[in-house]
Image (cartoon, rainbow, N blue to C red; front, side, top):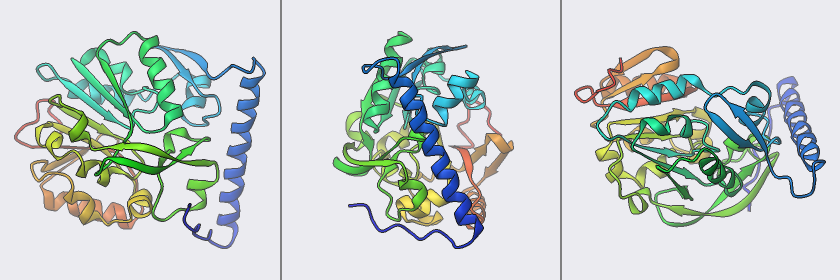
Length: 301
């Protein structure tokens, strides 16, 4: 069962937030109805981009809408992954790959690419996009990355399918207003990925601590680890603090780079101080790349 919702704050801010959520849901439903008008078997729309075609869900008001109306991908993150691929025979692991808009544009720069996606609806589109773009070096794992194998409760979001996540320990209206809850398969990535992985990109909406605990071997071999640092998700999905979150990242990763801020922090103590400040001020870091200062072939920082 979904845990009790946290009450929205009183006043205008809470009212505006609810109005925005309802507006997003109406837009998503309208997009679904438009797709259905093509026929009862319609399931997605093909978008032509500079890096090839992508099948998208028009009900998705974030990545899907952006591709449909702008045809643009996140070039900053794509360029960074290309930079991180400057290794002999590099392998990329993308945990939370969504429909492939980061993994597939850089697939030709890596010898092997492993993509992990927990949302069954999104994974179907990802599988079709891999085939559509004819990537022979990309392998899909349809499961949630966790610390223990089995099943876990998962929220499949409609308005922002990229925001789908394991059931938060503290659930708020913004997580649940458009979500379908169901069980999905969960795996320890150390159990299902045999390859030596050089670059790990993780975007799993607050579930990082669980995934990291299930991939200690892979982390010990990796050169770069890129994760989001979103305080509200760390607090609510995992219900942990900064110290516990950072403890799951090996000590060998003694430096962290923020591409969007062009900032590099050296030393675990300085990283912890930086993250504590971000955590207490509820400031997001959309991409935080951990690496060892003595093993940095991409020259970050």
